[in-house]
Length: 400
Image (cartoon, rainbow, N blue to C red; front, side, top):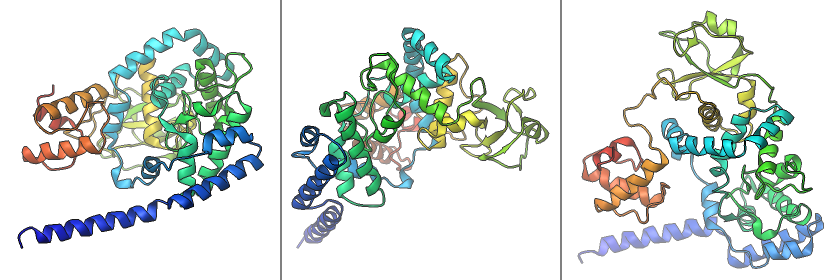
């Protein structure tokens, strides 16, 4: 009969999806039993019974957190999209305004810890949009879910859960304040619980370490982290440079050499002038030899340790430079379809809706719904179907 094969395919697809979900998600009874065990473990580790009960009784399995933890490498964002989103004009303007507002605090942090205040502000801006977006995952439930579902990072998530509950027991935090990222980072500069316990400091002198509500605590704690990660006062963290034609020398953050050696290899400042003086540096080519090139120093590695991603450290470093008054990256990214700022992503969603490719309420966040709408638009315009929020589809829809 017409339509029957489609029904069978749909049934098979649904069955496979349910099977995958059954593997990924523990049964309700199993999850409840796991959480009960975690509660007992937390109390044995010194968490007060009232905090453990408030945080974990009736815990809900957080499927979204588990899904985020399993994102595959092929979904990595192109570096030009990543940089356009994280270091846009809005974040630069907001950062300069916040640096003026908290000038005394930032200068005090810089004097005490020796860390460039622009870098501290850049971490604040990228981690939580200067305190505005601290995350909406309830950390005890997210970490309990990640622990109970198993996997190679089970031990890590269990450790973070117990550390978070101990903070709520010992550090003047309440269980109902523990909202943050899917992996348990929270506060204005997004510390994971074990790092919070180890490196958070009281920056405003009130006897508490409150990275959620206290800007001085958050900024001082970030500077303390970077100092402990190897930051050296007064030294550089990143220079944009120019490669000689046909460069075939070494590259990589860890393959360091003296500035004199880089001069001999033909590198110059991005404007062609000779390199200045500095410590040993590695050559970072985030988009290959046809894209921007950077010499990165020991202080860049301190920034890298904050999130263990070179693209992240590059975004922090570049935002810090922009907050200090330096210009944008000079060498263009090797693409004809550049990335979009947050304002442009929001406008793209509005344009998609207006053109009939409904993506829901515009929020500037490119999730599954937006990618699906982009794919429909790309197919309509005869473009390669990627689902990527790039400049070409933005222009096709009328963006400027």
